[in-house]
Amino acid sequence: MVSRAAPVAAPSDEAVEFVRFCYERRKVGWPELYDEMCGVAGRGLFKGWTAEDLAANGIGLTLFEMPALAALVSAVVNEDRSRNKVRIAAEASA
Image (cartoon, rainbow, N blue to C red; front, side):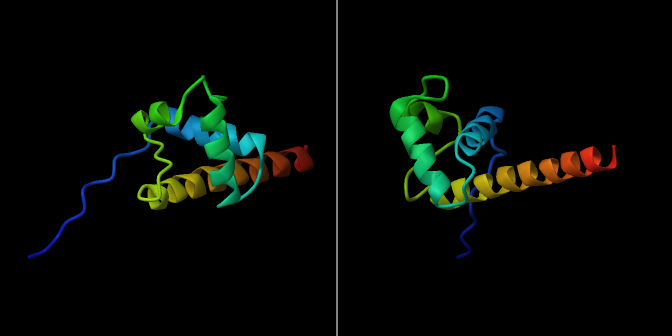
């Protein structure tokens, strides 16, 4: 019997916004950013959202959900770094 994984839904805009919010607060990599995300959730610093609100919007902070969260964080951070490189190159050539 072949087991198939459930399709992975694209992250919501809110999920990406949360990762960016946390990354802007503390520009660190994984797993330090995970710690920041848990702290932000624990204090409701992003839109007043709790861990339950975040989970409803595609941000799971549990051990089971960590691989998907790490992949999302990696994608968002890489996109941010690429955007910054382009901005710096444009400023240097101006």
